[in-house]
Length: 240
Length: 330
Image (cartoon, rainbow over all chains, first blue to last red):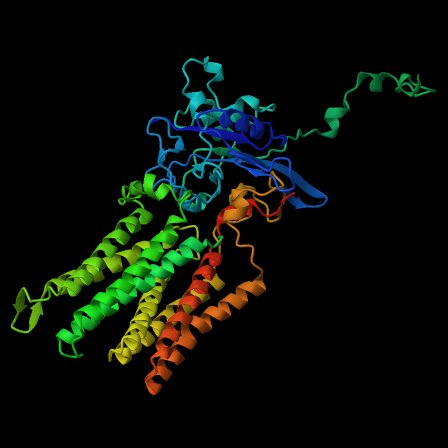
């Protein structure tokens, strides 16, 4: 069975919010639209978003690290939001595992949002129905688009390729390989929701260099005669 | 969680209505066993059912305002009965109208006087239509209590609610307020059952005080399973939010936070502890001594207002793990 999902690489996310704006642009004008914006130019703007980028500081100054954290529906394999829905508006697609809301059946009771530990569902204040990330279902299943464009808008927008997309049940997909080889993990594993979306951790890249690798121990110049002494200005010291 | 007044009124009104109906049926069973004097069908049982129905109707009106748009009640809410296999909310949406129908039928049977026994069990227990419908109604009332409470108790990561105590509280609060209402109704209609219903009201109020006391204690020292570490998957003891990604608030900042200060919470808790438990018990005891008709009514009013506060406090007690992602605006 297919389970489409995102794999988000926290190591390269720079927190530019390109995924947030591209998500809103695509979805507000598509199948899941419109996504309301209330008081967009006033003091207290608010609106419906499927995707957010948050920023966290890890550690204590001066040993701190900034982590930008994109957050959207994780398309759980055991979604707690689906069985609680009284009308059947909330469902998980059999063919590709995407969790969706039927906006024509939703009564806006908000119970599914209470049942989601991640807080990724938002009630649209204009349509008064529950909305959430659709994984751009109208894009990824659109066969009139070339294969390269059949991806969620956020994935296509990400300038650092921090968002990978694929079938996490196919062991050879880019997403599965990344999870397997780069320490992919799930959020709040304690609730047994088995999120399909995974996150790749921050990584430190260090090369180990020893003294003798910087300076040749058996430098032939050293053996035959002393190194020429530095006299006067070198090219580096000349200012132009 | 953010307390919604629609749900506060819904759960308290139908709770009292369910308790009231169970009190009526209890009275009928007692009088059949000749433990109590039989009451008039029309003025007592039919009127009592009407009061219960009015409260249930009030609850239903409150529920309509919990929908995204009230118009969804007509256009979409019927679908809410379809997912009873998995959803406690769906089960509640079936049990509530079913219970209302049984209360109506029970009242109608008494009003029309269709109380001639159909058959007699062991020459002692005369079974009539009202007894059968009443028994079914009591069962449906219990189903409705459990369904309503399980809506909250089944959410496993809202750890404050995820406890059998939640179900016990809903049942005993409903019984306490319903029997108090039955005592008030008896006092108002001059029926000599104030002492009977009042005694049971005090007993149920005491039991609910114990079970609510346990849940207050449990929630005070609850240890949350989700932390910043599990929410982000970053293994560090010190994680501070620097931005939640927007400045102006969202559904996430409105729906899951109650926004009340600790002082307000403490005041509301003190108020409901007095108004739900201490004051009604004192008033019912005083009414027993003074044989006053107004004290049981006052007891019900005080207890009902207390229950509104209790339900409000119940919602603020629920700490949703999504709040971990919304600690700092930016």
